[in-house]
Image: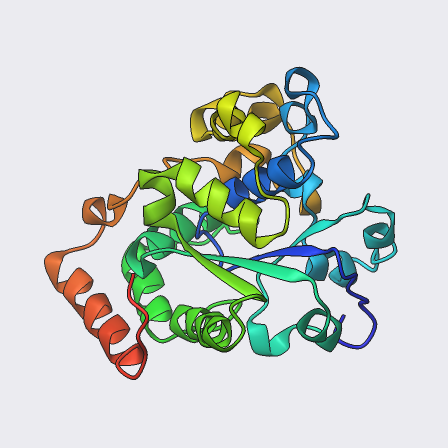
Length: 268
């Protein structure tokens, strides 16, 4: 992927650590970028899972189906969980935009643990305490969450026109503000007329958690890797970690986060 993938100037890359709000951001970005192309009443997001509208770059290389990426209509919205340092140079050096979303590590862990233990092939006991231990050690498929966030955040400071950092918690509080911010960043701002007729609010509603979760395709369908689409929709809330972590666990994770970000201006 690093050697072969060719980024296009108009590409929008949705980057994130796993379970950080990726599915939601993919839906929002796709709807924003292609709002003139699709009617809301027959929108692709009503028939397809967001991950089918916004393919994961590395997945198609892993399955040797990378040519599919060339067939995605332009401007492309593509997804990745790869850390910034591991991205292909063509993404780093092109004029493509990267929108990165991050989330409180405690909620990331809880969401990730719930998803992993749903898979039928994961047929051995995996208590939350073990997942917590691995997470704190940074033994995750895409590396430690703190390194992942810091790479994108640090680069965004030096290249603010290249990378936009969004925080899941802030997006939940005011999704319309996040949508407007993202639209401005990727170069397709909402016009005054679009604002007046409520385009932003319509997109937020189209991509809302409850709307997407209740769609037949997301209740009964499956996507890349035959992953059931309903695995991507659980609660979409802030603070669910309180239902699974002891105060000592939460404190440990918060202390690790504080230490990892001690030399940075980043805060959740």
